[in-house]
Amino acid sequence: MTTTRRGLLAGSAAVVVGAALDAPAAQAHTTSKPTVVLVHGAFADASGWNGVASRLVRDGYPVIAPPNPLRGVASDSAYLAGILATLSGPLVLVAHSYGGIVVTNAATGNPNVKALVYVAAFVPDQGETLLGLQTKYPGSRLSEAALDFRPYGEGLVDGYIKREFFHDVFAGDLPKATTELMWAGQRPADVRTLGEPSGAPAWKTVPSWYLVGRDDQVLPPAAQRFMARRAGAHTFEADTSHVAMIARPAATAALIKRAAR
Image 1 (tube, rainbow, N blue to C red):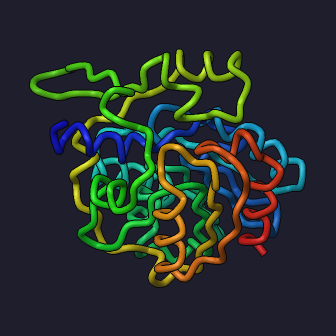
Image 2: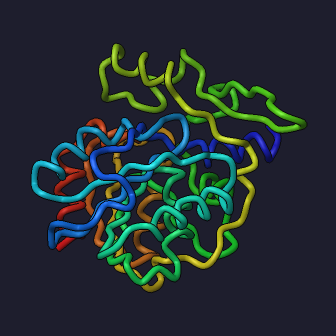
């Protein structure tokens, strides 16, 4: 297995599903509560946050779930930073899987960011890569055999999770009918995301929270605990797969509300 492909396993470990919810980026604040920004990872889109977002919106939080391009660490982070620059008032950034490295970089230097919440996500230090963090501890089942690599453009490669692996590796605690739809709609990650080094981390100056998925088959729980501990994050654990925000939306929303206080 090549370093590039194995790296994808890591970065692609980012999974979430998302759809922009409720408030447009430039919307003025009509509440004292912070705006919650939900950032998905690879093999998914923003819709994966729907169960969490609906609970937050019901409780009066402004919510936005922007798309994550999944093209590269620097470019994805710059894209998110541009979105954050259009938002006024305090912000709570929430990331899943690969979205963690994007949030870690995009939040740096933004004084409106008051809290970072990582949901089974990567929390890199400066110079670290997804591949390095993914392979730091054993246990990930997101192997090369589980991935479908497809070329695009000139010399570029995207990675998808194969249908026969998607449920058990990515979201084993969800109904297969649900994971079939997730598989069909997954968004791939460029394999270059795996070896691209992270920049200066926002978690060194911004308080953070972490939700560990004890049954995660993508990002080993030991790796999650290591990153959370190093960041000094308020850490909580749940018996859930890699997609805690889908399998345990109430617990995920509760953690976000803790961070938003």
